[in-house]
Image (cartoon, rainbow over all chains, first blue to last red; front, top):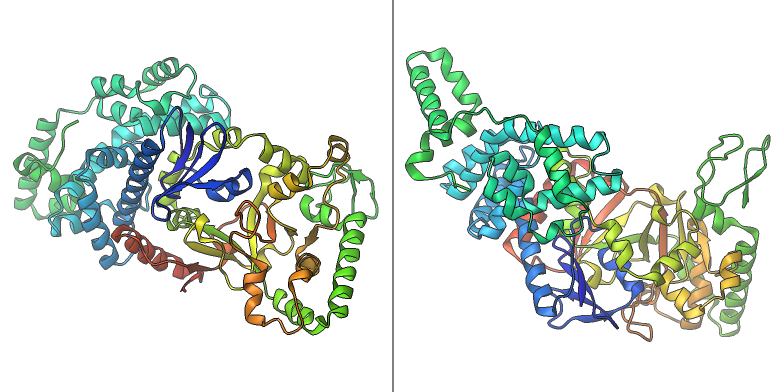
Length: 280
Length: 288
């Protein structure tokens, strides 16, 4: 039995060798028979397609449920970062996101996405951090802190990817998009950003990469294109930040710097004490 | 092959192009050109004439007139989950589009997996431009079958009128039912009189639904007549399919209709955020 599913649509279409079936998490207790005609309306515009081979209905249902929760969490994370939304809506998003991030597979998914691409200018990281801090939402704070601190490295990894892609290393436009999505979902971007060799190796075994040709070759080319990580260690960054803030207290003009950099400063100061930052 | 509308040119052009390859003139979009072919229009007019005649014989002319008036205000609706609507309506927003694009994949896998029937049917109906077609359903009340999604995205008629056509039913189901020969498909000799331009949609609906109209049919029954859930033999929905050429963005949307209550806290937050963000585009949420 093969299946195609979309967490965003909350729906899967299954082909068991003879019949087409649709699975809707909320609507039907049992899969509903459908046809090729139905199929294009069921998942036609979905972009977050996941394909599973040699599976069972129970496994499809489980995978679909997880995919939907993961997509919900991603959207909630984007709402927390959206400065155009009302504070009340962003608070609700923080509250629900804090609950959802308790599950490692959801936390990992959201980190995989947010650590893959430099935060766009429209992302209100400082505002989101202030909200999460006020609501004592440690998992959300940890996520935001990781995204804020990781920006220089995320930009370096992303630039290397884009440069290679423009040279045609990942195929034509469609193939490039598919490969990018597979690498993001498998956690390769995050592992490279974090400089985590163990995570990189285990990501290579992820099923998301099964449809990518010459995956190791592509990964190696990409790794070679990424400049070495010259960031100081986490501990020394923390110390440097702490000194900067303490200095700023004595010299009023420097306070402005810490305010502009709320997301990283607050988290770095608190990080080691209340373990806001989760290790890989 | 169609003819270029530029009187100084007038040469034949391939059926799938947007510009004349000879003079560069912008053409009508391919699906609209296909519906305007004389053999298409003649066949549709003939079906419509016979349907009206039948209704007249049964004393249903007034009902047909009322149905046609209602159809003049019909819209195209796309049924989607809230998550997909958030993505669709965030295409102009940097924060959302940046991260959503990272997950954009699988369309080719989807095309391969649906099998040959769909691919064949769509290649015959939209030869050379099937990837440009977005599918919707014709509706009188903003509702569609909720098995495809709990929200109805109603498209602004003015934004699609020049690039939308209507078709008798689900195109794949139509092809399976009529089972045209290879020779017919090769010649494009399929489905004449079963498609129409947006402006002629009432004509197609009368031709299709006349047998279900009676003298004294209550206009309140019209929406359910136009779009029926589980009406076909295989339990499929029966509707008039709308084919929209080209992209659909938040600016194409007239309103969104919520058919079912929120299923979770996350969904309630998504809906609330969506309403806040979309108010600037003038897109309203209607809860049924």
